[in-house]
Image 1 (tube, rainbow, N blue to C red):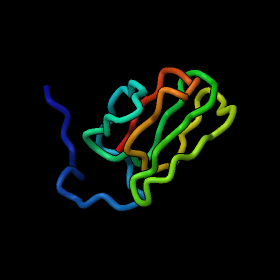
Image 2 (image 1 turned 120 degrees about the horizontal axis):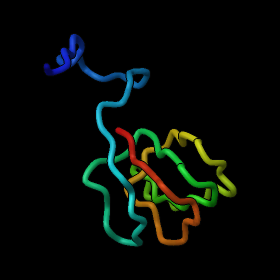
Image 3 (image 1 turned 90 degrees about the horizontal axis):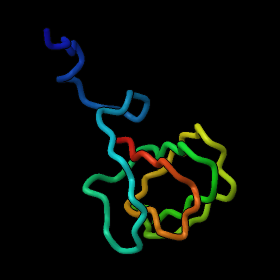
Length: 89
């Protein structure tokens, strides 16, 4: 039986749960199909992200495993050493 989503027709706010996710393969130029709300870090390391709003490239150093980074990223670059990354939006 399919799950019932009583809130599926509600608009998502900034405090709402995410609606979808995708595995991130770091790349230096390929933008994601959707900008993230969070990036989940499954394996500790650095996360180098190009942010969606201003295009700034930011390095988050030594991010612990299990961290949810609340960033609107459009690219995670190959300079990242963190692993098992998931884009959540």
